[in-house]
Length: 217
Image (tube, rainbow, N blue to C red; front, side, top):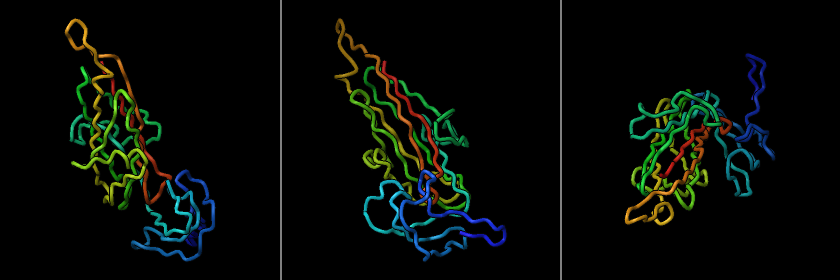
């Protein structure tokens, strides 16, 4: 895309990792949304995650600034969450720890907020725990663990400043994290942690990460 006012030329057909597309993108591009975005056709397979259909696709790229903002909390209140307005892909300064005792289930709440300057949607990816401490993800009452694990979960379009909440439930497996000792249930020490990322659909180079840790005692 060339801007005659500034003389700058910007590559639009770049992948989620910022690398140039690995195949041809065509010249049938159009500005949409009042000039805030561009739609184009490409045969590249690395412009979005999991593009495996082996054919050309239509892509939407936001020209306004895109910025996902992930936060984690122990309640369904975004105001009490950690990580808001902190942007990085390493989860530095954006960690939440949960403590489970005697195989009790514990919950965290993930907020994916659009801190960009225009409407956008975000894909969410996080791991589903291990054999000792499985993690499940819920959008309302719907279990979306499979799509979060694959990175295919989509928040749907969020206006600038709006957010979507997911609940993450850690449910330690009693037979693997607790045992009877002199007639009393004793918890075994087990831990698990995962980084949960949010990726802008409009600009997949924009990502954000938080870290969720679960300790069982």
